[in-house]
Image 1 (tube, rainbow, N blue to C red):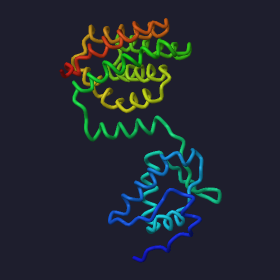
Image 2: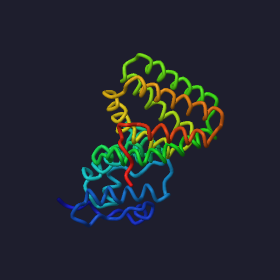
Image 3: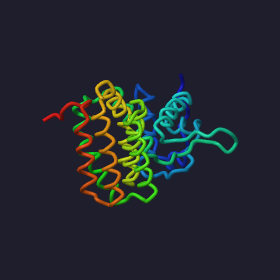
Image 4: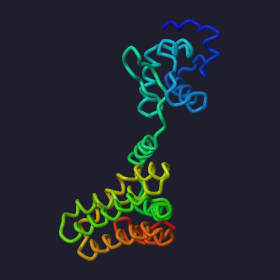
Length: 250
């Protein structure tokens, strides 16, 4: 297949892309576009060159450019809009994108229960500490409502219902911490967390159910009262009490 012609000098100077001259052109196109988008040259909402123009700048075929753009769109870096006013635009960064990428990694390389516990004890404890400093009255009400829902499920509901409310509570604490990195990480570990909580169902007698409900009530109250140290300590105790995760690695 013949290479597209060299782009005009003025066009090449406007963008951080150079001709691709390696065997694995697709990987190189993705790399250049990725680095160009993260270089600070572009802002969210900026329009990028179209497929033909990118092909000329990179000296690859449009099909290669199109596949690379699909990859970047899945990563949440670009948005391809159809129609007369469409085009290729730089996407607004989102913690959800980060969480999705990390979740995918954890699904392919699942952490052990001990590894997840070790991480959660410190991470969620500190997240609760920040939530106690930053939570709005509305967020505190949501935490108290979720704690009450867990208590209701613990008193006679299905374990699956309790587990869903429990996971939602941990996500709500992260949101109350007002830190998009913490929210993204919490969303990323949502799947292994849910699996761990669900695994407790077979051995979760009334005392275990009651302990989970009491823990979340204490955490929610500490956050509502602005008791950062208390929220952190109660969260750490709650995570460490979970028998589904075994003991942390030393």
